[in-house]
Image 1 (tube, rainbow, N blue to C red):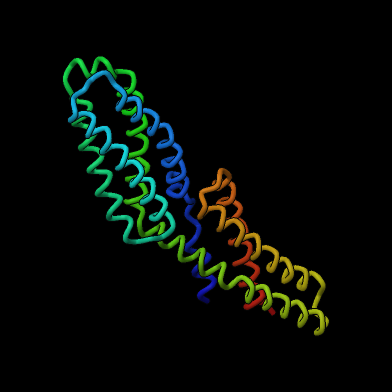
Image 2 (image 1 turned 135 degrees about the vertical axis):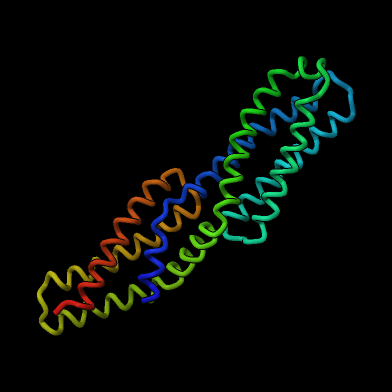
Length: 222
């Protein structure tokens, strides 16, 4: 069944989604550092322009990361381009004259540490394009079909009760409806990149495996 294959496709943990959230948080600190760079003692307009370019690129990178992790396929190519452009700008700025490097040594070190983390996370998002798009497609499909799925489970429960089937079979069928609802909630958590996304992924895997086993038993059992 299509539903079964969609559930199986969602077993990978959403590390790339979590990476996007960390990227956005990191840039909050980066904005402060870039402001300090702009306020440095050096009056060299080239360095000020490079700092301004980094700030603009940082906002763009954050926006594209959100779009990419939401499943926007066009955002991935632009994200890669911004990462490369921002890396080039940062290389030029950190290789400024000795006086500027000394004056802004602390700010350069702090920004460099943040940029390394951000670049790694952004590259992880771009590299995992197919997975992220698939996760979003599966999540949307599950959420769209959950109401219908739960209705069908309730119909199965009614049929089992009316036919005099063992009570434990009806209970298992009813539990499938509840687990389907929890699967939907955990999908939303993973796509949003919530703090407990890792726990949501583990619970999703357990529920999906249980769901598949019970559904198979209901289809193939006597």
